[in-house]
Image (spheres, rainbow, N blue to C red):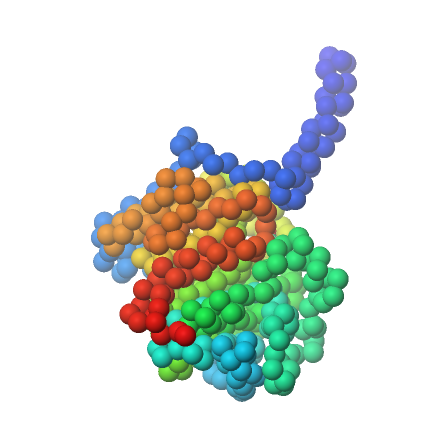
Length: 432
Ligand code: GCU
């Protein structure tokens, strides 16, 4: 008996070290995501959709309300938005390829209105309205644009309390860890193709910090039914909605070709935006992980317990209640993906980004397929995690490496966008 107790006492710390190391290895990107497709648990509850009509009119609205109740909290759709100010920053941006403008946009009409800055580039050398990509990022617009030479135009406005973002060595380190495109969008490549691009900093809409985030949510503009968002992932989606309101009113924009982009926490928000707003035709959700494209149950990487403990402000408090009992959670993330049907979705992944669970995202996409099938579309049709098809309804991209945005990701994003956007009549010849 004594020996057994002694053995347990000796083994316990060892087990602790192994557990901590395993988590750290996953977080540090030292493990590889499983490529196994067969013999893996399927997404639950299984979606059973009888027709596109029943999906659109009954099931999808019910699912939206379920996901709001159990995971995201109310998604602030339909709030009024208005342009507070607008200026041309550079009409010869990138040697005349585009015009860079900056807007201050207000979400909501009342005293609780939230203002944010949107930087938008429009292609100059095109004879057709431009498809639009709206991006939500970790960085303020000046940081996103700092890497491009601006013609003398005035500096971008920025609320001083939001700071300047990391510069110098900080930027170099961030690029080293998270890839050279973590902040920089490939603006020249978008403009050359005749695409417009707009960026906003999510933290300006609701701060990405526990207490400050929750406080801002309590003040956020209420919807017509009186509800306000209770998680920042849903609240940040309001930035996409407002940007689309404003840019769709601009004759330079082709309103029928709108994409949203987000990485990681912003990839979660991009999926919410697509699921709640059908003005969006394409969603690029890169490494969105838990609370995004990856399943909540039976997964490696970040658990619901970890995410709701470390980032409680991202979600409705209800999500945390399931942390210890995932079987009781009546929804899973394939339902979020399904709400994006029949639009096109790109799910970006890194093989070593096990923290965001690529395999769980693949299984979620498989579980969402009935929603695409209801519209006679295939959804995710690739046979394995590495068989990327950029023209698919649901495209799953897996490249080597960890969490971040590298050239291989940009190539996948462009191929995916081109498959929809350059098929527009005349597009290929419109840009010189
Ligand atoms: C953390 C978090 C993820 C999130 C990521 C990010 O790693 O655990 O859920 O996606 O931050 O936003 O970069």
